[in-house]
Structures are given as C-alpha cells and as structure tokens.
Length: 77
Image (tube, rainbow, N blue to C red):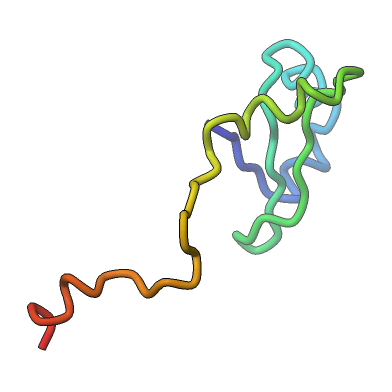
C-alpha cells in the first residue's frame, strides 16, 4: 500500500520521508489538493526489479475486438 502525503506536508518533512522510503522500500505519492502528482520510489540498479510489481497484472484477451458482456445483454433490457 502506498502512502499519500500533501505537497505542503512533504516540503516540511522531506528528509524524514526520504529516510522512511530508504528504510521501508515503499513508494510515496505526493498530492496537490488531493490529486496525485508525484511518486517517489526507492532507486534500483536492476531494471527488472522495477518491473516485478507488474508481474501477473496483465490480462490476456484472445480476441480484444470482440464485444464483452453479450451473454448479459438480455438481462440488461
């Protein structure tokens, strides 16, 4: 789970947040008026390490142009 912090809070405690990211290895999302604008993540020399979080997240579609939910169409009318 990512931690979210406002820009103003981050500005006041930046070094503390940097140390926390180094210690825990978890990302920090910085928000502006509640909307995410920046993400700070630990540095990794191994590019494959950065992609590990995506492993298993890609869905496979055999026919991506085929409409979905056709079997539910009658129920929706």
